[in-house]
Length: 344
Image 1 (cartoon, rainbow, N blue to C red):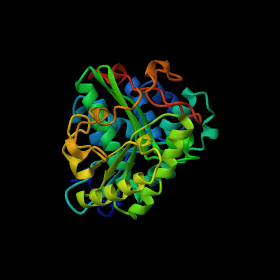
Image 2 (image 1 turned 45 degrees about the horizontal axis):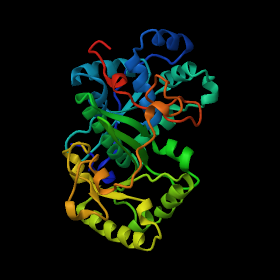
Image 3 (image 1 turned 30 degrees about the vertical axis):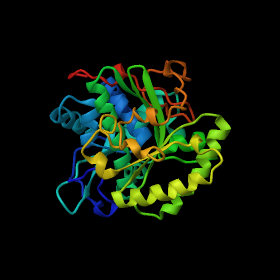
């Protein structure tokens, strides 16, 4: 069984793929496939272009009414070479299929965005290469948090994940100062919170994590925007150790309030959606214990409301994920764009 707390050491070489009758990724094939792709198919391809890989479980959560419907459509997209897939070998249980963007999918998105596919320089071996990456467990855990939020938003009309940026997109926007693992924005009714996230898998010294904090402070000073930092640690022991180091670092800062921090563990997130469960523990306001994501605003009353999604650049872009052309502001996720009919 695989979950967001699965360590990297358990994700070994993928199970070899079975022979299949996959169609060639020719121009004629791409033209034929384009005529059969739904809005949901294109949205899913863009999600994978942005976030590299999603499991069949995550895809079912965010885009399909049932596992069977998801598997049937994913099988079709795989044979069309819109998507590729792999299955890691794990020591216990059976891992789900991991999906990535494939040649036909990348070329179709390039045509949609007015890009010559040759300029895209898409290489399927690099896309599927995430199967052998030492960051696969890290990426799976991080994406599980956000897909859980999308699933919760689909079940609650007044909830919405209004932004989800990948590590690569964050690097393009903020890389000269800091490189967070992601950026998100969550709304419930008329209240909204945004955050950067760092996902720690326990594979490096915590001093390396703490060394990122000056960059976040500099970003807050430069932009004059206070953005909370959420940190997820692999175990409760590592979280406790990290909190001591983080508190010590903040004591030496002239304006510690410019970087609100809350922590949790992958174990806490494993059985709960982070928006609805009390899993987040603010660093300097722990008297109230762990709280829901949106209730972090109570611990940080000095936070300004995030910029309205309606006034964000490219807010009229119908795609909930960015175009492939380089850096463009991330359009917001809108609830109606995440709702699919069974035949969609």
